[in-house]
Image (tube, rainbow, N blue to C red; front, side):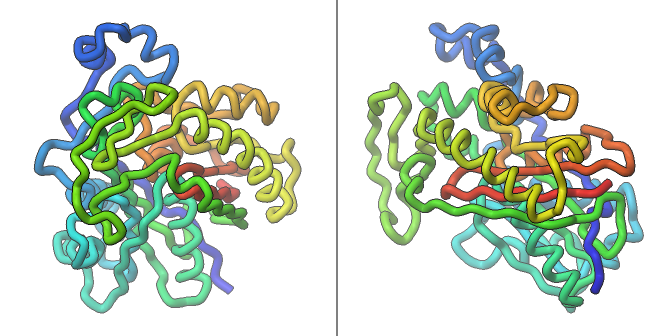
Length: 330
């Protein structure tokens, strides 16, 4: 049976940025220091008006191929994780295949997940490789959540940034993809949601309100119930981590590094404290990037410069509710 490895990672961030000073000018009750202290984010990248998730995914993939040109001809499957597709149809992955000039005798598909999307993508890519359906899977993650944020939503606008990552999963590489743990709880669907625009509620409602916690609730835009998302995370991630350890036959002390979804500083620090993880083992990479949803983990892996012979636990959690963890052996 073939094993599956991460062979290469690159990422792309849009040129436009939204700084804490910009937000403070829009929301005078929030100063830049307060935003940074609460979120751990000083600035975040914002897609241009006509820049889509697939545009960013293509740019991330082009960076990967520029760094290793020989890989382009080897790709035999494309997976694209996004909740910001170009169209209802056709599938964005098919358009990406054309734009990148990849082989036509290959598979390509989209899948719709948020902050757990990268871990799910590794699972799908590993499945394709282990079953010998593919040998080199181009896993793309990209979101333009900022386009879903209401202009008056200071909470979500302070957290989310746009970005994309390209990860090549192959039969060899620098990090072996070990075993997974998953969780799903659809009871949380209303706590992180864009209500209108799909088949259930196709027409815009053009309404605006604040919920009991002061969070913007506009059905045509992204709504996040912050306290409920926070509680969900604290409830499921420690158990998810324990299950992942068990599935990999490892103890907590055998994990050298934790790279969790980069949601926000407060949530990450609370998780670290509750799970009693040493600070030097826990990676935080938020300041100039923000929460890029499904791309936070691959961006963090790229920037962390993890040395060889390390066990790294990755975990994604959020909208759905959906949560997933995996161990990578560097």
